[in-house]
Image (cartoon, rainbow, N blue to C red; front, side, top):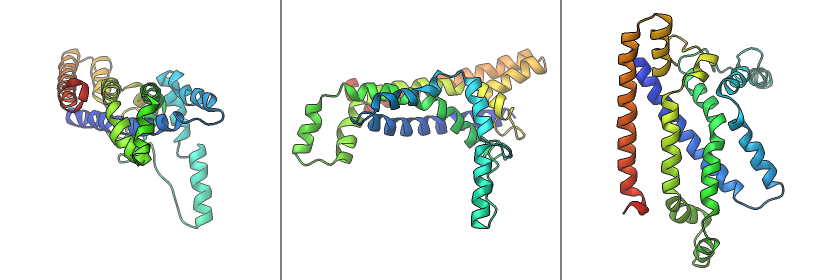
Length: 235
């Protein structure tokens, strides 16, 4: 069970950071462009981040419920239209449940990624992009060769912050799956909580806490070491 909790935690950290950074970077690029109602759209995108994690988890549980949720109704409608059964056991299947946890957590915290990456993009001088376009660079080349490298220090910061937060994930899991089915979504933090407060084994829970601490230290140290090697400002 401990091995399962460590594996699940790493899945949440790696999957959550990848989803949140990729989507957040794309949204930041979109919101950095001038269009009608941009300020209103920015506010709407930031709203999930204003919710408490428990409220976001309840919203996710209602959305991914297999019987009464809007998503379940859409699946039934699509199944009827196509003449075949389409149903995804989002919260009740061991293979689907971890992915659903990542989606719910990402929905709430993608705005955090977007906000900080957008702030970084807005301090990049327009002259740099204009000079690149004069030289014949495409939009993708500008993003890959200019925007992304300049944002590496900010990217490292937001990725590390979110990774450390996801290592401690518990509220979304408790509200949506309770660690199930089985122990397929039980994180280290939830295992510590259950071991100490449900079974009263405080010594073992303290030992698991040290394992979590070691995982966080190893991850943060390795990540910072790698980022120092690739970040231009660190050279």
